[in-house]
Length: 399
Image 1 (spheres, rainbow, N blue to C red):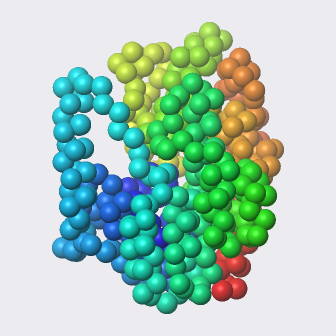
Image 2: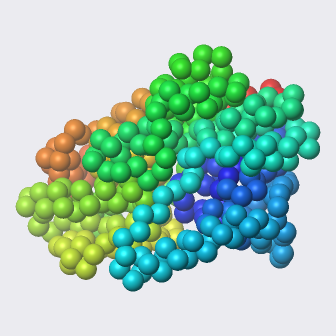
Image 3: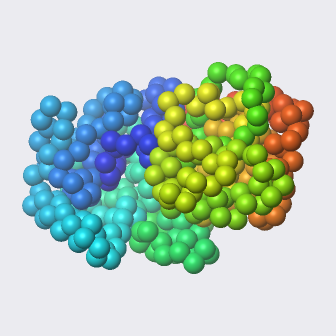
C-alpha cells in the first residue's frame, strides 16, 4: 500500500478508514507492506511514528530517504525540513494574531520526481496487489513495472468534498479539482475500493474498465445497553473537522433553541474532540454538557440517548451514524449524513429535511420512551448484517 501522509492519529477519520481496510485485507489472507512517499508522507513535520493499532495490522514498512530511531522515522530530505521551518514561522505569525491560511497537501498529486521514487520503492518488493491510498496517488500506479493487481483506496473523493464546501459558502481546505480530473487520476487502477456507497455510484460509471467495491465501515460491536436509565438526552459525537464543526454550530445555534422552546429541561451531551471548538457561551447554554473524549462509548449509548447527525458538509461516510446505531441509539440525520451508506441504513435512522423538522423529531423522541426502545432494538439487531464486508474479503481471498 502506497501512503503519502502520517499514520499516527487514530482520532482522524481517514486513519480509521485505513484501519478497516487493513483488517479486511488480513481477513482475506493478505499481509501488508506500507510504502511511504519519501517527502509528502512527512507533511510539515520531519519526523513521524505509526500508531500502534495500524502497526499491528502491517508486516513491513518502507520509508525512503529516512532513518528509523526507536520507532520514529526521521526525514533526511532538505525539502521536508524546509517545509517544517516555514510552517513554524507561519504558526508563530498565527499565534500572534496574523491571518495565515495553511492548506492541506493531501489532495495534490506527487511531483514527478517523488512519484518516480515512490514507484521504484514499491517495485523492489514482489506483491499480489498494489493499493494507492487516495485518488491523487493513483497516477503513480502508471509508473510501476509490477505485474500485481493495481488498486486505489478512495475514502474521500476530493472533488465531492470541494463541492460540499462550496455549497455551504465555505472555501475547500484542499486542492479544488473537478470530478472529471479525479476520474482521470484513478483510471490506472483496475480495482477501486470505496469507503462510501454514493462515491462508488458517482465515480465508478466514469471508469468502466475497473471493478468497484464498497468497503463498509467497521464499527465495534459495543455492549448492549438495554435499559432506558435516567432522563432521555440528545448526543452529538464527533472528531474535530470542518464538517463536524459546521454541524455542531448548526445544532447549537439553530436546532437546540427550538428543542428548548418545547422541552426546557432537555439535555444535550457533546462527546469527542469536537468539544474543543465550543465557546464559553456554548458551555453556558441550557442543558449543554461537554464530555470531551469518552473512553467507553457504551456509557453514553442505549435507548436513553438520541444520536444526532445534523450534517450539512460531508464527504465519505458519516461514521457517527453507524456508531449511534451500533450503540443502540435512535438516530436523527439530515439526508447528507446517510448518502455514504447508499440505502443500507435508510429505515434504521430518522431522516429529516430541515431545521424545524430536526428539532421537532428530536423533541418527540425525547418524550417517547417506547419509540426510542423500538428503534434501539431494531438498530442493534440489524446493523451488523447490513455493514458486513464479506464481499471485499472475498475479493482479497481470490488474489
